[in-house]
Length: 102
Image (spheres, one colour):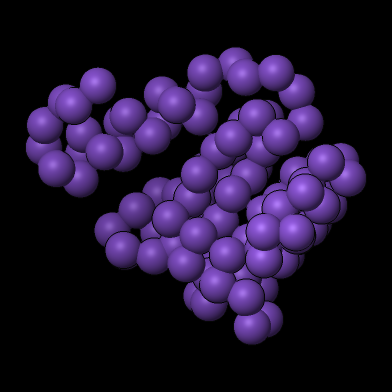
């Protein structure tokens, strides 16, 4: 993989990120997600996933939480925003800097 930014979702909506220079993956199940994360986690700097897929990468988030990269962002790619991604981002920022900003 030669891309440093990756986007992952369950539908073709993820291809919008390709026009922005992201490597994109359409993933339908947890096994495919594990394989993709094994492939990209060591080289990617930013990984954008659909909010609904956060439960599939819980182990990777914990394992990578002490490293600077990759940064994993959850955005509403396939459905309307549920707020899960923003809550996770808030928690990550608070943990990183030790201060609640927003």
